Image 1 (cartoon, helix red, strand yellow):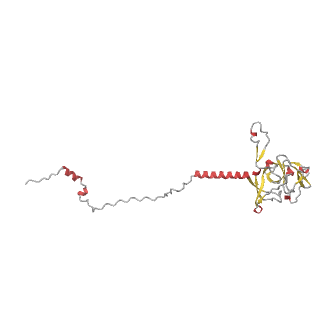
Image 2 (image 1 turned 90 degrees about the vertical axis):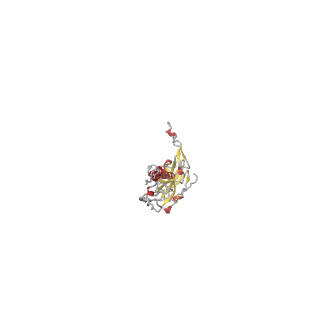
Image 3 (image 1 turned 120 degrees about the vertical axis):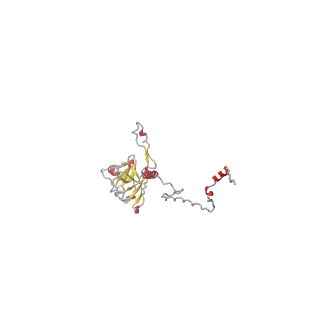
Length: 265
């Protein structure tokens, strides 16, 4: 009996070859268990902290230094402005007794006598170095009765405090233990009865003294214990620092320092 042959076309062979191997091995079943996924490795702990978006940036060292420098300059500026307007002093000695006492601390108003020389810029020009001073006061010059602080003319490193008795052009005379300005008796209730004397070897002991231009005649309230214009003549205005304005220590003495107003002489 002849043998039977089964013929397979080329297309059928290709289809078989394209069939997945697991299907051919009867492994393509819905019951097959899917392989477990490999877990991702855990991230290592980090020491970095997240910075909030609204957090202020950390200032740099340069910024900090600049801020400190600006603050220091501002403080110095305020200091010099205040020092140009007022200054503090400590009273040493008894020359202003019984009104001001040794050890008191006072504030001095420097602005009230502020002045400038109009001829100062002109002296910078060639041939003008001999121009005299021409001072202009913004407010006013020292007046009779003002209590002023000034540089002692014979030693400008020392500061004195006295009362203005005469201004430029005044004629000051001491007679019978009393003070006369332009021939009129000066009313001085702040002396509380103290006598005013002038030694014969001083100018005021030889007769009336004319107060020169650019100066004031000053005396301490404690007339028996005061080095003043009776001894070393009139005080140049350029040595005046300011007007005594306020006692601020000790606290028991805190108060304004009042000038005495003299009638026009």
